[in-house]
Image 1 (cartoon, rainbow, N blue to C red):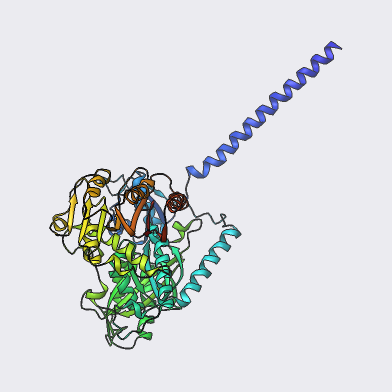
Image 2: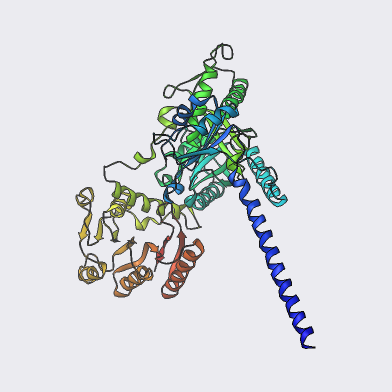
Length: 564
């Protein structure tokens, strides 16, 4: 019996040893099968080039590799801010005319220049990797949505993504005010936005960092584009506007030289067929990095006598009569999009030709606000201007009562450098503005006779103002852009001034509430809502509005109303 048990144990041990050896052998074979394709890459006419610089251009790469043979295409990847922040170097793929040219490049000695660090044959494109049905459905849905937008779109606005919601809200509010308060218009100038109306059709994320594309349908796209582009209140949100032709969406790919040549021919045919008159064009392309290549291809066609013998179209950067806009509105970014963009026409573009001039349509928005040489004063000035105009354009209260204008007394808390004080004097006609801030005011504000600078904190200024008979009980306007650790103190200081008897019987106020915690819009709105609810419960407040201005940071909200 004992011998039988020992034999059984020996058999079990032998079985376990054999199983272990078999598994080890299979794991080794599996590992070799995985490693084999990585060790041997089949020669092809396409090579992978690693370690190029962030400033390396396509022309530099072409001149470096052209002596190995003819170069068909160059695809550079990773020359963006995100890659630079991760301390990674860009790379590129170079496609030669034949395999022998690529072989000469790969077998050449290591470069002595700093154009690239390493080169090898590119991995073969794996056709077995197929996108899921869900991915395809999502792509088809996005394309269909863009095509629907394109049927009515005649104005595309390039917007900072962080300001997109605010711009959409602004346009909806403005459009509603136009519909609810129609006015007789005796004039119709090119820059009169009141002669125009627009509908927001939708938006999409652009193929650029922090940029979105907004689709609009307008009665007069030229006048609205000029208004939006030149309005200092919108300068922070809008980068550029493009007038396009509704219903015209073209497939193409401006990422490659061949794609640009093909698209330029399609573009020329479309423009020359739809516009029979002679035109001098200036080209405006989005994304801007594609403009130089497309402009070069289009210029070659325009100057080709066999194609443009009548010289119907010409190109000029300054003396132009029309603007030719080309806007990328969609790019498929599914799996493997970087590889596909070198050969596939996987992008959609909208185009348009519109009358234009250098003075009205090529504007440096950085100079729009510069009217007295003090940028900080102007930024603050337009922040309060935007707040007042937004308030008067929204709600049922309409324009502020005349009692707040012409000779009222105002108090500006946290006034440095003085932009709000300057606006109160110029817009409201205040006879006195107590400008309170420990910091300095700009010379252009100090020289205003209506401005009285109290270089201290508001907590220290209140007792002094209460002793001043000209101020006590006379303050009709209270504005505050102070940066406080506890944002509820903005409301509490106003309530304190009311309690002490500094305010008039009805005081108009503008408060900037600045959230110091949180990251999302929902969190910021919730925090501000809590403070505003407590504020309204502590005083008789009417006509209250909360705005997220273009001039506000993401965590700031502007609260406007009247306290009785």
